[in-house]
Image (cartoon, rainbow, N blue to C red; front, side, top):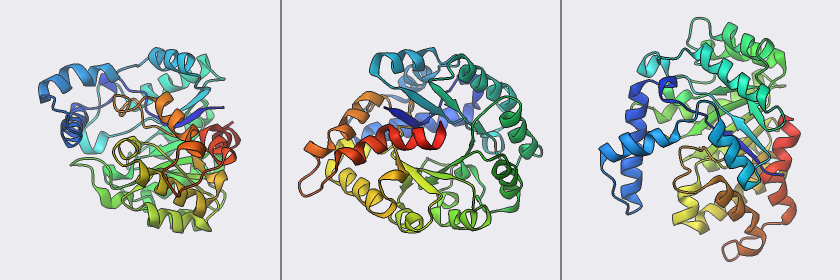
Length: 309
């Protein structure tokens, strides 16, 4: 089974223009670092629109063509950092729910709400109880800590409803995103204060991955995912193998999930290519690093199936 546990369905009107400018900046500079030059205007006018898929048709077609059994969709809420988008967050969450209802065996859709919204707790509760969304996604790098009072007001609702949380961790994103809010140490408070809340630390905490792995080692409600490590896998395969091996050594094979962060990094590596690379680790890992078939199967789908279905 293949499950992508970290995917963002996007449309132009769902996110403020400031966010698309930030993404364009990241693409231009990221490609330059990889030796690929592309003018700003070409990225903004050609590459960025290729990401838009509000009905999820491109996603489902890709899943069908490439043997992807299920995808976990994680909405993003940038309202306080960039301003409200043209399409309200409520309307977006209903669109996620509609896609999940249309493909109940393929799509697992979360809610995504900035906890600083005045009605954040109520909106998250409605999204789960009334519209059927399966969890909550938080993006602290937009300017909040996961252990501050506003966030706890939302998490109290989520924990009571018994659904999981995905929290983006690590030093990710260009300005105005702020890395300090993604420090995984703040998850320690959530583990203590919400002992029944399953927490997925997205992105293996870029820049703080070792801290995350040691923190999560004995905190059994924390999982992590491989999303957006494709650039490392592409340019420094040995480092990718080492980091993934460290994750498995500290968390065990049952708490590491396959995730992509697509469509944002699909131009660098497709979901299928990333999954195939991980599938091949037992025979093709960097010298001296060993993975088993059992570990790979758990990462690619077994763990997400157990946690989310």
